Length: 332
Image 1 (cartoon, rainbow, N blue to C red):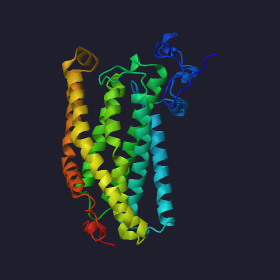
Image 2 (image 1 turned 90 degrees about the horizontal axis):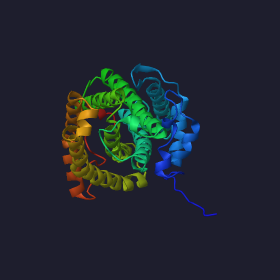
Image 3 (image 1 turned 180 degrees about the horizontal axis):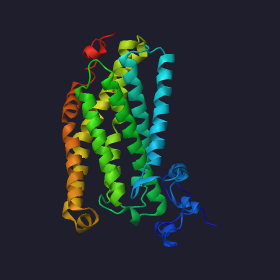
């Protein structure tokens, strides 16, 4: 018999068969776990995990249980990373150590989301349409996509809680970066919750998540390495730091200067200028999403400019060992 080979991102059935999953069964019937065979192999454990958590809906289509699980896991991860940092010689009680723990947990979450959301978006099961309805996709795809939106919502709530706690317990209070992150997280949460509430627009959120989180591990890698060269004298750390900085600078500049605006323009066009977009998403909500998207993009301009400048500087590092980060970091 003729054998077939499949990659991690391929399907075990042709697309036309794949779409004939549990959605074709009687309405209200719970999706059979057999439809996992239709999903890319890399997504199957994620879908099974999502389905294992009972739903607790606080609004139609908006589950609170899975975000709570995500927030709990991220909190445990954060405390675990803090213990590892202390064991590796980072100073206890230092702002450098506290923020490095935050950066490491953020980078871990971003790497996970980038791989998972990338598999959902680019597996070939569903064409990318920002205003598409969630119900039009195969059941396994819906569970995977909704799971990532819920997970990211939980992460945002977790991070906002830690940011708020750090700000109110610091003698320096709220600073610009912390306030910008808090507002970004709130806006992102509102965007994703409204996607789930109306059952449409989820693909736009996933694409914004993917393009936004793609550079996150590199940015947080820079945040970690710039502090590590202050804390440690190890030669390999100081040799690695310039490469971390230039990698972040180049990737962030490309994503925020070219890719991000293209995604935002396509989103704007689909929501406002296509019949499908006008039917699937209320006009007021489309305008809200578009505003949030462009505000976040334009709000990142200071970091985009810094990244472009760093990229143009080449291997000449900006964040050197003696760089002054301000009074909050004066302990070293």
